[in-house]
Length: 482
Image (cartoon, rainbow, N blue to C red; front, side):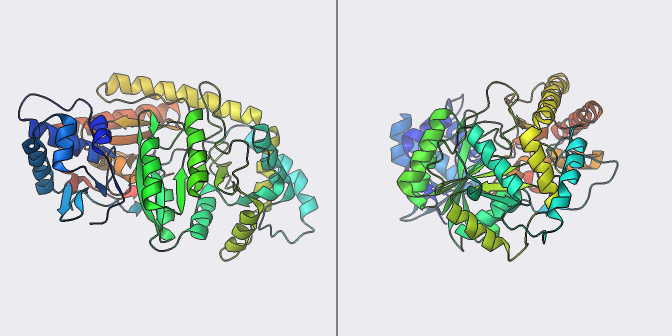
């Protein structure tokens, strides 16, 4: 059994919280450990403390911890090997992320597996302005492996305005953020290389790491954000080539790194020489309070803290424009790497993005106002129809991360699909099948669609509560999550 890291007894005790209840202590401890594994609070392939060490930390007998471990070994949540300790895993029936289902949704199916609102009304004007600017580019070849100068300058100015001085030679334009993530991971990872990822996280980043031959190593994201202590120990223990983070309005939990956390991440990158890829696709979508400070800080760590940005979430999913901010040497290297698959991003779309970055404040204001309204609508609908579900209202981003209270996310999603609603089950956001208690619910649709979605969810929840299927029976292909 491969192991990625070890968790100490004090940290495990803190994660278990108030685990005691009436009945046998070993049963309560087994329940708490199982829940922590299923929720992702204790990542898979983590070596747990020894029975005596944990017993001392919990102030219980060794018989209690030994019996709890025995229960979980029998169920398939723990594996023990002489000399290797006891390691977290999942039963064979639950392990592994579901495969992606790329079948287009039927016209009558409401698809909320994609967290993306419609285009703002001002987008059309940006396209018209870009068409006026296009003629001066028609005398060129149109191949732009680095990006058109106007857009690279606009992106550099955007970073500079946010407090990170940037020059155009530090910017590479890509065909969407996903393209940028693939380029970065392919350039830095090979077979067997570790890639630290938040858990849960953006599913396509996990796919990109595996496509490059890398091995994703998860670090939990709790209700208050990324577990920085475990991030630090994981990076020291596994020596990853890359750490992929979503610092702003995290997908799917909605949390953001604090200013102190950002300082710690930059210090960790410097101390361990680990490349940190910060996905800022949702940075513009701050709905409450001030926008978060950039993870890049003053920009002096451009060789270690690389950012990925996107116009798709900020403005429109059909505007497939992304970018990388890095040191000029890495930018040139990535431009050379991309030549194996494409020769540049479409010029007209680059000109649209440049226009929006320079003069798109109204479009962003319109988008944020829409999302605030829909977030409140979805919150109210859930409170009315599904009051037992629990979630924090995020200060930004595109979705709620809902705790269903039971490990039936795949079952609910399977029933919803048959009732005309397509969603992403919690395990789609995990490395190895965690998060069956959770469901991502975007608030990106119009009023009628959200009302219909919650009505379908309520019907599916009632059916699942009446005859709860096993996790094995409920698994299904997940939609191509965005």
